[in-house]
Image 1 (cartoon, rainbow, N blue to C red):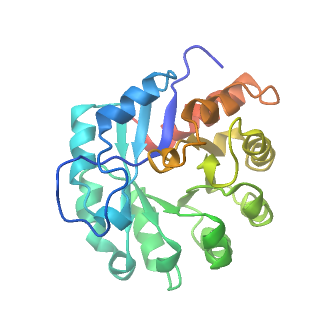
Image 2: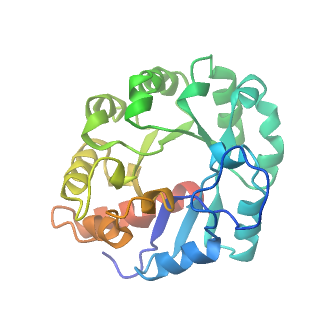
Length: 264
């Protein structure tokens, strides 16, 4: 990998250990930005994208913004979309004003017309990040993304979590759209160390999307809840992949995420 390439974890969740009311008990109870950055530093990963955990905190981005202010240039903040924002995209105005550009949406909120939301995000220079897992594929969320991307070519879509081979046929179709990007993340959902299957799936996605539309993400701390999962193994599965060239690895391990989440 080029020595000057910036390395980025494109998908993590963090939260403070302070008690507070959440929609669900946090697991683990405490996973601070300091804990996360220290874990990344062990593997030379320089920056991260903070993704709101909707089940815990809904659309509250307060802690994530505090992290970004505390570690400028090392943390980018994603926003969250629920049914209310689908119906009234202007509810995202405050997030946009605070520099948020990418917004996560779950399958449960994708069974209604999304065109007004997509038009709003396109005008705002935003990015829509549908959550993609095996369950979402079964729920039909993946089927909705292609036509939506066709109707809104000026809007970029970044798919959260690719699901390995489970979603491969649908992702092969989506790869034909130049405005769809993919996070190769959450390896533990379908593989275990040393993540040979995840590496193979990532190489296959690289052939379909091109490295400039792929980005690696840890999905910590969710990723770490199962003892058989390993951050270092997930990182090195791609960093040391012999079937990827230096330029491809640099894009997947940071370059692509930099263009989407750290554009300045």
